[in-house]
Amino acid sequence: MSHATLIPQIVGDWWTIATSPDIGDYGSAHQQPMDFGLWRARDGRWQLGACIRRTACGGEGRLLWRWESESLLHEDWPSAGLLLESDVNSGETLGGLQAPYVIAADGQYQMFYGDWVSICRASSLDGKQFSRHLQADGKSALFNEGQSANTRDPMVFVHGGSYFAYYTGVVHGVGAIYCRTSRNLHDWSPATIVSRGGAGGCGASDAECAFVTQAPGCDSFYLFRWHSDGNTSVYCSDDLYDFGIDHDDKKIASLPVEVARIIESEDGMFISSLMEDYTGIRLARFEWQAG
Image (tube, one colour):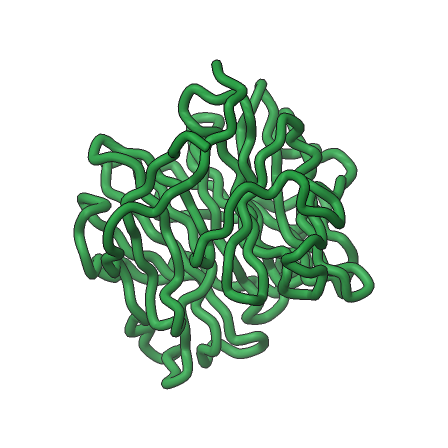
């Protein structure tokens, strides 16, 4: 494995994989697709799950929707229906669901999402139909950074037999990327701030859409973090708990994307982004280049 720092690079043109869907009675002229996850279901078809905001579902106006496709190279994926909506009986905020992120673990598909206050989890055998996990108190919340911190935008990176959950929290108006770890998806460690501030700022929307990965053949870890200026900063670190607090010493690049996800398949490597006007979701080819 190499310790050389590699630089992320968007290659070629974007293509649109999804636009604002017809969501029936919940539909609104103002609805927009937002944070999302991409994964491959058990039948081999690619899945896109996204938060749709400004709908008519009540409360905060957000729900989770799904599309699917046989290939990442296809445009305009067919809509596949409702992925999940809030359940107030499980303690979730009405219309508060945000940012689904799915991994394969324990023989199932595990979906992490925000409910406006907490990070929650649901699971699926086929990677399409998900059921939420409830805690001993009958609620879906796994953890949060306080009732007013709008804990959201989870992603989970698996390394060394542990699950690293990275997510956004806004405590006393300061936005940051937090991390908690688990060996079993049930019991989670106390939170650690892993990224905050620097040139990207420390406002409520300056530490969102976290994505952590490794480049092929590289020991280092890379954090993609979106800021309210519309760009995603990329940080490189040897420490999964430290991508830079109030400085940019670990920053290596800035990309004009929002909700960066790096996806690998037999067709190559890809990067995702929301469209700049929030009318859809797109993909482009991606590669790591020598610094």
